[in-house]
Image (cartoon, rainbow, N blue to C red; front, side, top):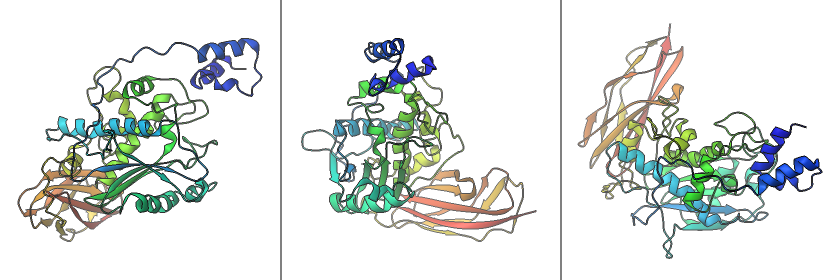
Length: 413
């Protein structure tokens, strides 16, 4: 028996490993000792996220906890979801602030008791109805959970909901838990949705207070038999799962605000895989490169009605974007893509982002002003491969509305 590994597993389970098991006396003694060991010392902090406050914005994020008929709500679910929201809101506020954008932060809906509002929505069916267990069809939860959430809290096109769903299963999985889901989408400038598996609300990963959450985020104890996506190996450390979960909420909420992936600095940008390094913003020595949003995506966020301090709420029409035809075929290995186009808006343009589908990444962006702008630019890209290069151009106005167009360039020898 590998006592070292067994001890580590028993410690991370808080001694619960002993139940229903017959172990050698010495091993049982060690596991029992681990279960009652004193709490870990307070972690070395970069900083503590500021508490959520009611910003009384015209447009707010609604927090939802979805529980199917065959499940029970997890312990302290409202406090835990509030803690997740606190860290996620901090990522948005701090990243924008570092880049010079004035924002008080993310507008989260509050209840009359002065705490973040979390709507408990009881599903109409068992968990398998939503997840498709045991097949776990990827988009099934999006198509089945969100309509019930929408019926309970309001139309998704006029509200932005962040839903934690108790639809995952306890069995083995290649990564995290079976039936795990993390998705986000924008429907309008004032409506969208994020959907996340509630495994992140487990006591192993989510605390009732920010102080206790920081202790968990500093914890390197292995979660035996489980693999975090960011870690990629079995028995991943506890903090990796927290980064996967809390970070995924920030990432998918970015999509709900209309952001696209940016892999240019993949380990740092939230809309790349930087969200899996979330711990560096809070634990250990001050980071030279904190996790946050790229300048291109920050420009978009700065004009969202959920974050901006003075959005033009009277502006409800998205910008119009027209792109010129590609200027002949591009060569394999080329590192520049010329784009020609124009953007117009009835009230005022704010920013443009250039995104290449084949690279699944932002490749450029700029501030805009006035009611019309020339979008001509030569985009720097990774060496092109034979086939196509599809460039999507997104333009946001000062009301947070997003217009887009796409051009396809042929790439040959």
